[in-house]
Image (cartoon, rainbow, N blue to C red; front, top):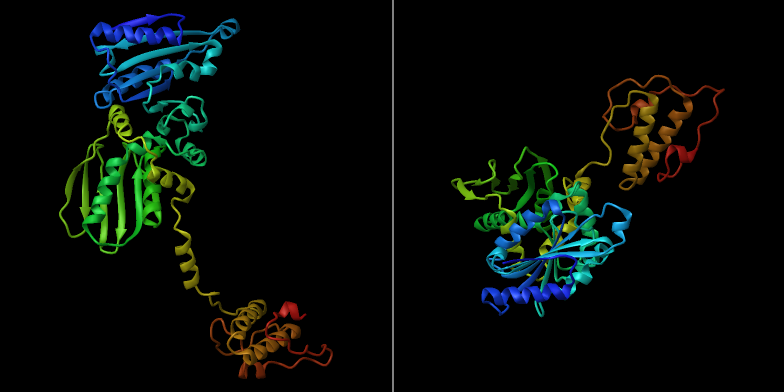
Length: 415
């Protein structure tokens, strides 16, 4: 049963709902929540169809808010509310009210929606497109216990993920996160089958797909390992590869429907990972109305931290690297720098030897020797001992050599 109301009010819409329920013989209200869909005319049909399909599992009152753009300045000053009330078979297993707002009332949609909410029932607001960056700060979002967005429909989905991390409020969720639920379940089950240590992960998927970034951030946050994000032609997520202590674990889905789970030492298994439609995604989100802490933790991990190993691993690598690589002294300048580096390294272990080396380097620097002393020498070490004794003495006209300086200073500081 359908009822069209032109230039109406919220009270008239409520009366039309009661009249429609009596007409079809179901005066009692058997709905469990109110689903508010904020969209435009272009996407209203698809969003409403998905909500009607999901209502078979979650009977609800669906309010579709469509903000119409007035063409002339005069029309923008005149507020008008048109409504279409659907009850019975035309509304799935619940009730549907399509609200079209014109003029100044567009900026006050919450005043129209509030009288139509089911009493003592949770409220869920869903933005199929053009979701606000701060859903909880939106006037309609402030009415809801759960706020559902879809980053995949935005122009810059990866950047929007970063912005949503800063405005996250308990109760926010995204359909891009809902799409990877089967992947998260399968990867967790694969790690439960074997006792291994994961060392690195690679997530492969199409470009500008926020589900790939969310899965990568979830793995990096939970496993605390480096996660690399690679690109493919799609569709969607195509593969996840984990390097473990007992060999690789791979979940590969090349065709978008059937995946292959490969674990080293076990036969490959086929896994059904089909791409779900919007109705299934909305039905999953309506099953739980409490805050999703796992989504919040993965979102706050940060897209910028992908493709980079964690700080503890980087510090361990830096500690294992030598202080300075050895180089051959091919000229006076290189020999002097090698002497300074060697004297700094040896100063902590042998103060006397470092002081002798330093004095020798200062004498060689002031004498301005053009040719290096003959004879082989070890790489990265100063020429001392016999080679230093064979070096030509400075002429009388040259200024006397400087006194040795403490081992803790370099040649430039001594001068």
